[in-house]
Image (cartoon, rainbow, N blue to C red; front, top):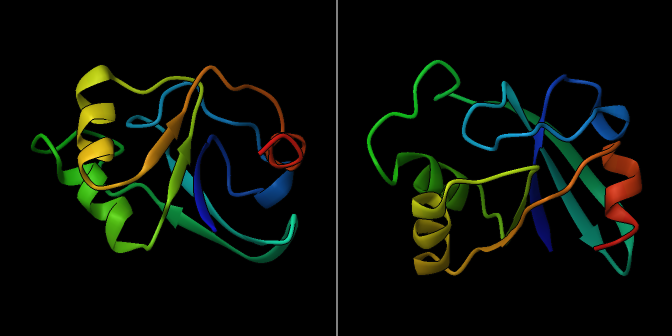
Length: 104
């Protein structure tokens, strides 16, 4: 399972989950298998300074092979785009990424 988590920094599992998915500077992409982290990648958000066109960020995330996105918040329109792409959204999350992964 591949998860994209909105991140405020490039600190990997020690990073804090960002409060807004579309406006976070980074995405921590975590590949999980049997509850264990198998791979971790930090990706800069190409739409950090602007949301781009509607649907661009969900398409970008889909092209990374992500199945779940996690953030403090995600706009309703973005959630609809993610759902259309078969990507599950988890919102209302805060804390360190390593702690959040234990709950997924």
